[in-house]
Length: 150
Image 1 (cartoon, rainbow, N blue to C red):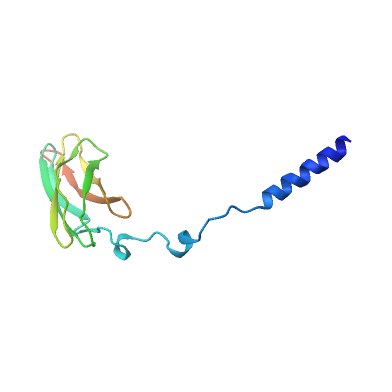
Image 2: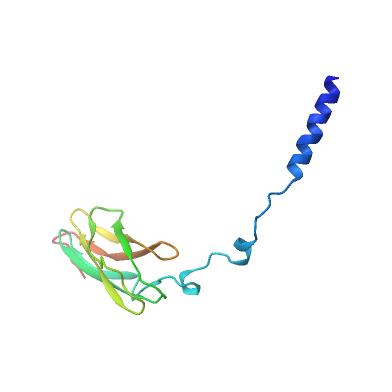
């Protein structure tokens, strides 16, 4: 009797697994997620994705500006600009939406105190784009004071 009940239970479980849920469509396959360029999304296009500040003396602070254009089809909204290092500080960027075709600037300050040698500082820009984050970089060489800069 136990074998019969187990067999009956197994058959009913297998038949239940066979049923497919109703109402599922193939929209995901027909309409895959694309980039902002092929959708009605904003696209942030930087004039330069890497700015070289050249050679500076340790302790100097430099400010560089990343210029961009919204080359997409809807308003660009930058929600945050951040850097991994506390020596690199985003100090100014548009807080209002940037319409399609319009441009803007992101100001970055780098403090070279205690940072001798080659430097590459990455800055992450979060916006309503696809993908949501864009990385730009600030690079250069920090020379110790009194060292020949040739």
